[in-house]
Length: 98
Image (cartoon, rainbow, N blue to C red):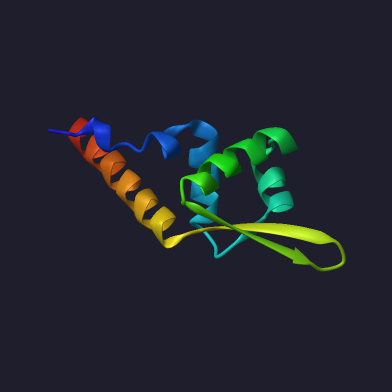
């Protein structure tokens, strides 16, 4: 039986799932790259990134290059949570293919 309670509610929201998926694909993403890739407004993106950061799933790095730049990456906890989330989704897919 699938334990649907294991679907992390923080990750499960569509925008946050999109962010976590992108962050899982490379070591770090700048705010501007995430915004462009996801076609989200500044306010919407920062709100979801803040939720993920406060949950300990995403790390924030601020640097001063030509101009200030903020980058985001998965924390170890975030990677584990995302992998566990994907494992539950895989169980769901397998159950529907029987």
